[in-house]
Length: 227
Image 1 (tube, rainbow, N blue to C red):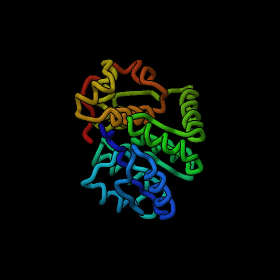
Image 2 (cartoon, rainbow, N blue to C red):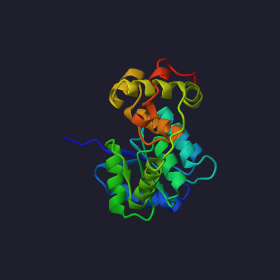
Image 3 (cartoon, rainbow, N blue to C red):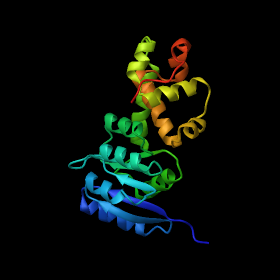
Image 4 (cartoon, rainbow, N blue to C red):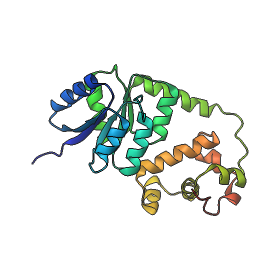
């Protein structure tokens, strides 16, 4: 019985890099490259009517950058997994990539073995980050944990800060719904729900939902503002 191959798309503005990754993947029996692009605009055009299981995405490209391109790709096909492959481990790049729905972030100085392992991991719905990138995420998590004064959370602050969908998801979390249950109710992918959860925490600068909703039952009874 033939095993379904992982369909990989490569978006990077360096031809040598694209060719090298294509060659590396072509040697793997469980993967195939279904397309390449030298810009975000080209990637969107090529992926418009074609599905890729994993998109290998560079952060910095001329024109539309990797973050903007990835948002558009996920909006068009939520079943695609974005794996950033970048020279840069800047905090803002890593955190923004995760917030907008990326499944992984690997630095370009990693080994071929780790790179291929990352592709397989994200194609199976897992998150995958290499050591230096993980350090960035741990640091950001600790910064949230160290926040001593949680901002006052009122009905007006929630209404003004959250989109309608975020407000709906916050209500369902308060009701004890799981990510899967929320995803099924609103016809979303589980990864999209996870992204909304992270955005909600970030907007209120808190580390967990217990902290966020502890004293807000009286203001969380209706659906939120329009998007």
